Length: 166
Ligand SMILES: NC(=O)c1ccc[n+]([C@@H]2O[C@H](COP(=O)([O-])OP(=O)(O)OC[C@H]3O[C@@H](n4cnc5c(N)ncnc54)[C@H](OP(=O)(O)O)[C@@H]3O)[C@@H](O)[C@H]2O)c1
Image 1 (spheres, rainbow, N blue to C red):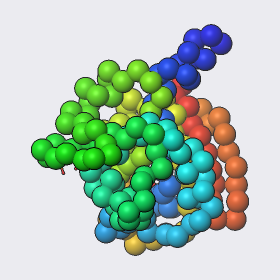
Image 2: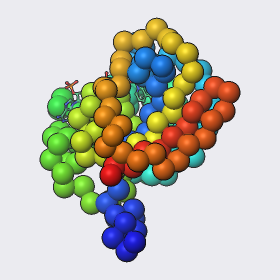
Image 3: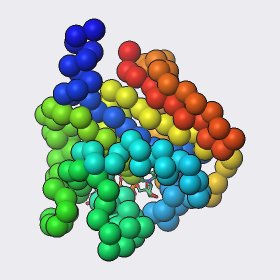
């Protein structure tokens, strides 16, 4: 009990994403569907939090938010390019970063970053979006036998879940 509480507070790597029935998560660097209730759910979980995302996802979000600040706490952006960002810290070596990270982190995509982060994640917050969509970015296959389903809520459009590593 004590141990899991400590893990929860100090060293919890969460991943959060939405995917359709064919594991599609993106198309032309955008989300392929418009699902307001899932955006609200995503914001509820990530607002003010420490987040990690790839460079492509960062610029995609900047496109949505335009001049408004991104609604997170500390922002880490994984990139192997030599770039500087006003509102984010660049992570040039994602694997070392995840190995050494000792805090609560929310991994927010995209496809490349999800794939590299999956082995380090404690919890997966997956929104299963109904239907099939045109897309060019996929979530990799997940071995669900490695996780327990600890939360599930179904609406007409979405099955919200949280899986915790066993
Ligand atoms: N449905 C959802 O929930 C959701 C959420 C977020 C994003 N998305 C979608 O995902 C798609 C974007 O995914 P993406 O794979 O193209 O991009 P991405 O994961 O956002 O960004 C990839 C970045 O990671 C960098 N990188 C690769 N290996 C690295 C390492 N070992 N250390 C540090 N940085 C590293 C790459 O650098 P280089 O460019 O220099 O190689 C690249 O800039 C978009 O379509 C977006 O809409 C969907």
